Image (cartoon, rainbow, N blue to C red):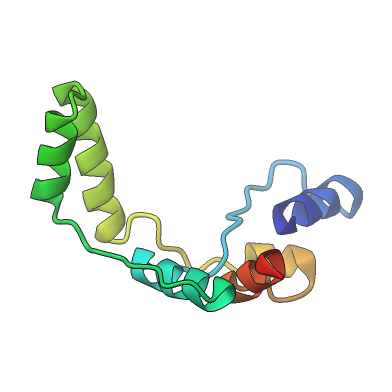
Length: 111
C-alpha cells in the first residue's frame, strides 16, 4: 500500500521526472520477521538460521542446477553482508510520514 501511495505522489505532485527513489522500509532479519508474525498471530513461529554451506547443499540435493545454486548463495551472502541495506528516507519523504512498520502491518493484517 505505501508503495502505491508514493507512486501516486510521484505521478501527481511536483516535478519528479528523471528522479530515482529508493523505496524501502525498515530493515529486519528473518528472526525478527518470525518474531513479529508470532506476536501478530499469537502462534509459535520457529526460525532457524541456515549456514550458506547448508543452504547450498540443500538446494543441490533438491536438484537445482549448480549455476542457479551459485547465484542464489551469492545473493544470500551479499544480502547478509549488507548489499540491500539503505538509509534512504525517500519513502517517508514522499509519503509525508513514517512508513508503516512491519509489526503494525502484520498486526493490521492478522486482525
